[in-house]
Length: 242
Image (cartoon, rainbow, N blue to C red):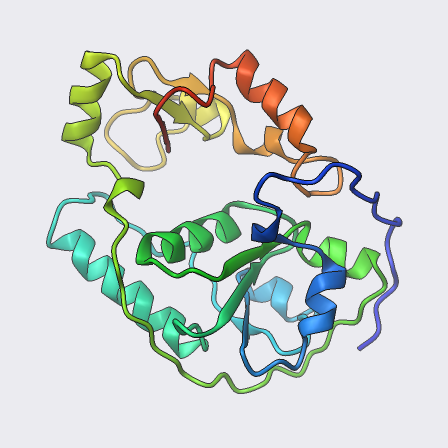
């Protein structure tokens, strides 16, 4: 299924410090058909029906979450997500690439999960489907049957923090909470079904959409660094995003 290309994507001139984590459409195009590639489309179903990147499996993980990260609930969630991702072909020996319509919270959530699981070869398609079609690459409505895979979880405990520990460390002044939610959530206007609205005390608010450019890709590294520095997010501090 051919697609009409959108505006030509701007070419990056400044590399990211960890640029291997973000894949460009051109890089992904060279890997299509590779049996060691697990490509996962994280968009909602109504978007997937308009076409997917060839070879991708579909998994909308957005509605799967927790109200508490205390064990054993957290352990059950970890194993559930491992199973669901495995059914989409995500294995410990695969190169995994997640994407959505642009660079967004679904891809970030899936990427973080695999990082927590200890997977060493996980990536995000920067700009998502919009960047793919802007590069004049095709979509298809034919979805290949995924080949289930498995991987061992080696939890990276330093990547997650519980509420009690976070509260203690905030009081001790050795960690800075980073609230990446919308303005309405931060100011308590949108409680999202919870009993109370608002933010964690002493949290810095920087909504995740500010990290992206007009094309839905991550902004240039220097621009992001200035954005974070203005908010007090610096490399010498421990940061707890939520």
